[in-house]
Structures are given as C-alpha cells and as structure tokens.
Image (cartoon, rainbow, N blue to C red; front, side, top):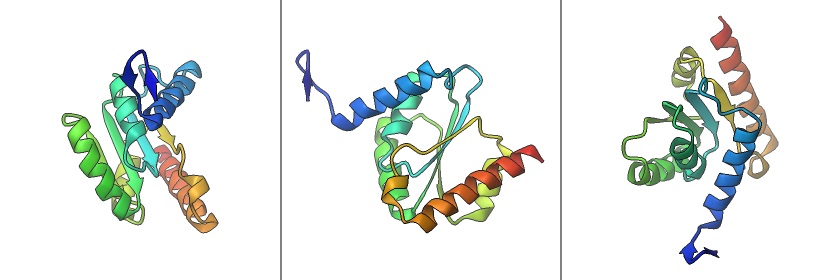
Length: 136
C-alpha cells in the first residue's frame, strides 16, 4: 500500500491499528514494562510495540519452535537492541520463569483462529498458569 509516497506493509498497518486499540484502552501505560505474546508469528506486533510503547522493557514470545526461528531471525534485524526472549510453547521450565517476571500484559493478536481448539486450550492453560504463579 502507498501512503503519501511511502510503501506501507499491510501487516504493519494492522499492527499500528492494534497498538492504537491498546493505547486508546489505556492498556499501554507506563506501568506496562513486561509483555508476553502468545503466537507472535514473524514478530510484527513485538516490533511495533517496542517501537511505539517505550515503557516496555521486556518482551517475551511463546510460540511453536518453527515460528520462534522465524521471529528470532526477523526481530534480530529490526530490533537489535530490544530485549526479546523466545520460549517454546511446551517449555514448562521457561514458562514458570516467565511467571516469576510477573508480566504486565499477556496478548494474542491473530493466531488463535489459526490453531486447533486443543492448541488454543493449551494456550489458555499457559495464561492461567502464568496468572496463578504470578500471584503466589
């Protein structure tokens, strides 16, 4: 897509809309420093939020290993100094460590509709576990 003479990727246009939604809902205030994203794809939301929400200090991505490889390769190029941690969805030890960080925001933008119901259920268990561990 072209806007004022610039090429804009449709994925990033959607990511800015998602950031706007979170911003308008006062989700991205100065208290949000640690974000966990489940199913980040290639990392467009991570890149966008780290760029437009400077209070975010730590970003963790939980996904399937093939998607983590893609996101890692992409994000290392576009967010070289960003603190992004990549965690396999079935790594219970790392997920327990994430809970210790007490994430301020856990999100999923576009991937649940692409997953089998049992995978979505497993993601729900991860979120509940993060919540339970963070409260203890």
